[in-house]
Image 1 (spheres, rainbow, N blue to C red):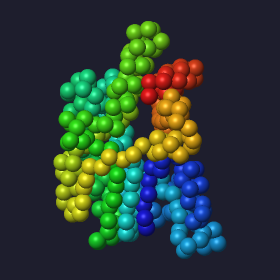
Image 2 (image 1 turned 180 degrees about the horizontal axis):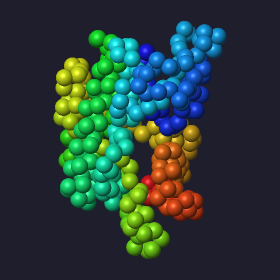
Image 3 (image 1 turned 90 degrees about the vertical axis):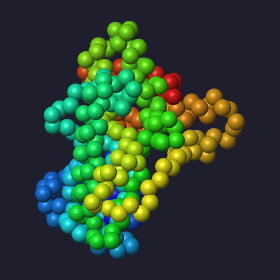
Image 4 (image 1 turned 135 degrees about the horizontal axis):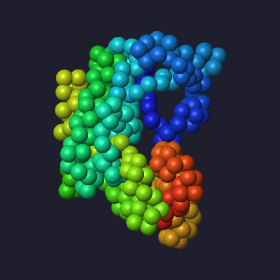
Amino acid sequence: YVMVNDQESNDWDSCAHNLSPIGKLKMNRSIPTKDYGASCTPSTRKERNHNIELFGNPGSFTKQLLRDNSVDITISSMAYHWLSPNNLPLPLPGRFTFHNNNTDPAIAAAWHQHAANDWRNICKSRHAELKPGGYFIASIPCMTTNNNGRYTYDELFTSVFDPILDRWVEEGIIDVKERKKVFVPTVARTIAEFEAGMEGYFDVVKIDEVIMANPYLHDVNLDLDNDNEQERQMMFAQRYADSIFAWAHTMLLNAFGGNKKLVNKFRLELAEGI
């Protein structure tokens, strides 16, 4: 097995479409997690090409999803910075992310501990699923050590998201309670934190900080055949806002009490801010 999760577009339908040249992706949304993939329904030989079986397995990636010693390579892209639902629950920080400098230190510490537990469980689960000698490969947003400890992936949230919401509270557009509900449970781990979670489960072959080019900027450069910088910036901003709303739309709709006009207003101001 090769285990792949959290595709770029954040939904299984697009994942199935992207894999369609290889075969048909079957999904059984009623699979009991405790079966570790025993109930998975792979595509039939007639439905697939290249002798590859495709199936979707629901469940939290912080837990074991497949049988022991059944995976050769696990590949994850942009997924493991998302945190599992906490059962306490932990107090909301009142910021878009808990590692904002304005978050109460006690609240931030509680979320950091939750994040450490999640990463440990992820490593434990992938270790159980992998065959001896198997590979665990992941790209995950991290806290950089060469940028004064700043999480560059998160700068958009602290410089654009939070100011819009703070202004809305001041202007009476939303109240403090609604403001608190706009929270994304993600974490920026350091290399040391990654290594701590892997200890006892994996031998680290390579772990690097890498600056990744923004794919939406790349697409804009390909699609525009002129040098109009303002047009280029606006197209990038709109596409970036669209990508954010792929995962943030439901959260914002719930936070704003189902007010679609407010959600659309936020989308416009977000693109302008970007």
